Amino acid sequence: MTTPQEKFQAAAGALPLVAILRGLTPAEAPAVGDAITAAGFRLLEVPLNSPDPLASIALMRQRYPQALVGAGTVLNVQQVREVHAAGGQLVVSPDCKPEVIAESVKLGMVSLPGVMTPTEAFAALDAGATGLKLFPAELASPAVVKALLAVLPAGTPLMPVGGISPDNMDAWRAAGATGFGIGSALYKPGKSAAAVADDAQKFVAAWQRLVRA
Image 1 (cartoon, rainbow, N blue to C red):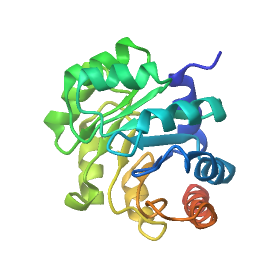
Image 2 (cartoon, one colour; image 1 turned 90 degrees about the horizontal axis):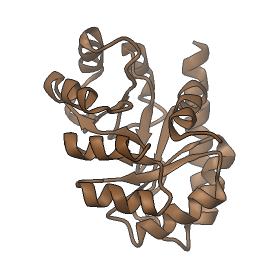
Image 3 (cartoon, one colour; image 1 turned 45 degrees about the vertical axis):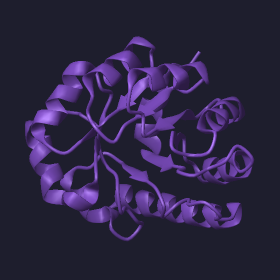
Image 4 (cartoon, rainbow, N blue to C red; image 1 turned 30 degrees about the vertical axis):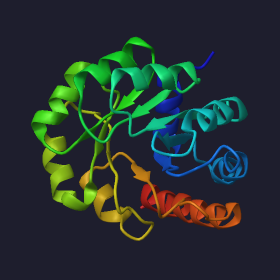
């Protein structure tokens, strides 16, 4: 049986892009999920401020057993437990709360908390975070990624989130970004599955170009 950590490591080696599906409904989840996974995405996040997010998580966890499916905007320990009960294996937060990270680790889930400073980054790692979400990336720059990675333990996954597009990934990647969280440029409420598929393929192609460069 593949563990959440193994799924994350496999995705990190193949396509370390997290699909942030904010606003997704359970009715949309199969078509949108099919579009994204067909393009190669294996990291799927449904923020908890989406309509009935736990239902979408449960549906996609069953539909895409090879993917790491979970929740974003996870703000407290109770939400971690609810995501776990729904079958979620990934916990993504906009902030760094050690108790949220610790509960995720306790339940065997992958934890990607949001950080901006070295203090937050080290606190997250001390609590057991699998990787770090640099958020919001609009407040940072590739230079921040480079500076953080100079002091963080070697191999620490650091993924900028916020305002990422196929056209601006190169500078972040050159600075050492491990991957990215992709939000409204990939999916937003009302967007058709066909349009999501098209944009998903653009992100995959952009990442593959960066890897080959």
